[in-house]
Image 1 (cartoon, rainbow, N blue to C red):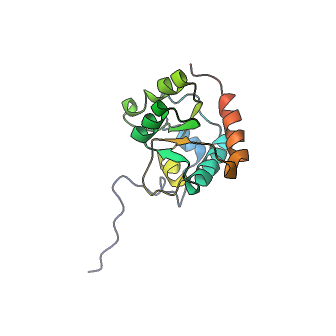
Image 2: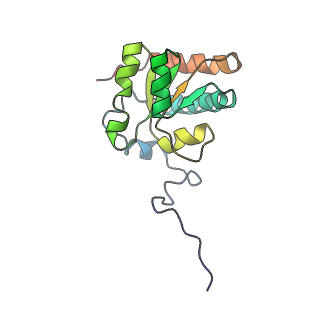
Length: 152
């Protein structure tokens, strides 16, 4: 009468970070508003920068916190997950960023975005602030995000 461990209901073997879902598979799950989308290389660089920013306490996570600090005038760049449902949760953030002239980009997965800063939960968006400890990574990401084609 041994019990088998249960998986989370929404989790399949393909979605777990252990097995890994490829970048191309993540692109199939994107919302229609996920533009400008970071390339595969830029996405990896963004995740690396987020990891360094989280250890230096220069990261704002979650929609409420990001929106609050953007309106208070904090500078940096915003990363938004492209697979958030419902879309209405994050659809106002690009307009806020454009109004305040803050660069932003979409990444394919909210799960990977959350795990980039060491959280087991998913995250819809983060605001990365500049610090001297990871300035080179930050500057590279900022430059590449600014050169992404504007949203259609």
